[in-house]
Image (cartoon, rainbow over all chains, first blue to last red; front, side, top):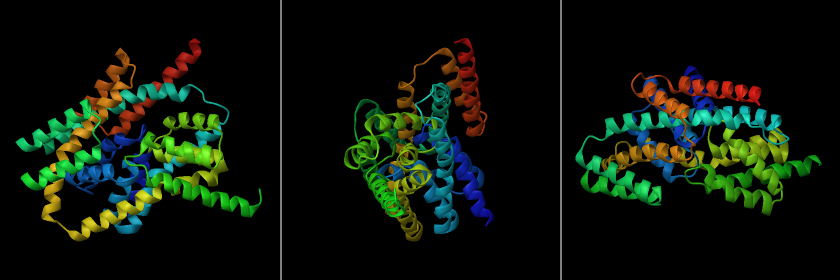
Length: 171
Length: 186
């Protein structure tokens, strides 16, 4: 029961501070995974890859997966509800408040949040990179994928399938 | 609206958002065109103007973009119940899929082939994460103060291991203060 409460609380917090959606969730989850010993960084990266090739957002996918690992099916339900509850609460408040058009306050706050979020994601990518790029082949994969992402429109699903094959052949 | 009609509408909203959730890979703003087609064109639940207005509000809500879109659109279509039904509908497909994958991965144990595949994928994911930061940075109208916030955030998290929620809360407070300040000056 205590574990379920902790799961709900943790993912509620992750949902509450995950402004901007998507990858901002990565530093937030990383922080808790390490603290609670719920999964390794390697396992977390596997999960991000799974989230890229399945429908749905990284935050919801992470909650479902971590919840299942920690407390089975019930854990996955509790964690998933935890991560969407802040959206529901804040969303309903904002929808009711801005029923007649939009103000400029949220826009202004977001202007200052965005660089902080970028710093967090970059920091996360930095520490994850350092712990994971331990061989020449890993470094090559990392550099080539980064160049592909920056300079081409290649689909992430294609990259994941290709690097999986490279892993099977050379790993 | 009668009770029966209202129930039917909620059901049909649930299945529409379920369909939207099933076809959105990677989540986020990619689902807006599909949502517009379903909500504005097919079902005529909202007018285009109201739809666009709703979409622009989603950024102000924490959490996944797809869930936020569903909550706001659902609320504008059918109130609080509509918001809940839409949110549950949009997350159900990915919930079931991830649950099945988690079941499979934990029961298969350490499959050597799978572990090899993931060992190739992980450096690519590290590149995805760095690229996410890079592509977000392109959408910003950079100024000195924003760059200082960025650097502070980066060093607090990497060097000093500060919990990200404090950094986000700090930026939130700076943003709120600055919008107060701007209002007073206008």
